[in-house]
Length: 230
Image 1: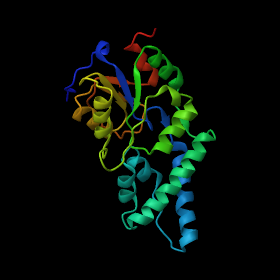
Image 2 (image 1 turned 135 degrees about the horizontal axis):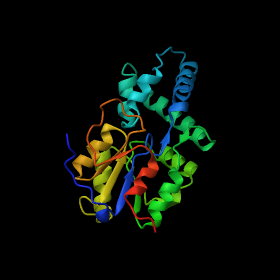
Image 3 (image 1 turned 135 degrees about the vertical axis):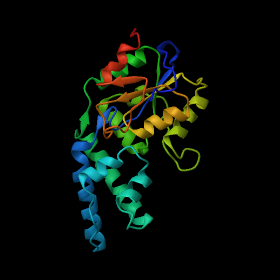
């Protein structure tokens, strides 16, 4: 299927990045972090619970947090799921800021080059603010981004809502934000906002999860092929 929305680089005013699988990968630290959080809960509660596998966890990466945990451990109550997810968030942020996880090659250089070209840099991630800001701080580009919007389960329930609010907040015309991401939720957000879409082939998408896009990126710096760096 051909992606229905046109991409014309000269009309792009902003780039909205997904985070995990686009700028950074937590794959190398995520299983140990989940295991530790679940084990901590078992010790505190005295209850034995099933720990999801790495494949199960990675299949959920990129989805809203509440969806991730309702899918992974539906047998637990929402309050317990929230408690465990908060613990995982804290542990992940600590690990990221201490140097764990993988920054994709040339991400910082790419971000700085795009910013120097006058483009607004935005985030459209299902991750929570501490997670998003920890990754951007680790890369060294947090200050290069505009105000970061995250899900709040009121006016921003999906990634598409985030992208829509950026259009309104910065008075950007349809087609002037390029959505960059690696999962179906990124594709959906772009589709719902008539935004062009760049697919990160190197990210976490399962085979055939995303088959339509304007740009195929094999590495982050491939973006620079489409924008004149000044």
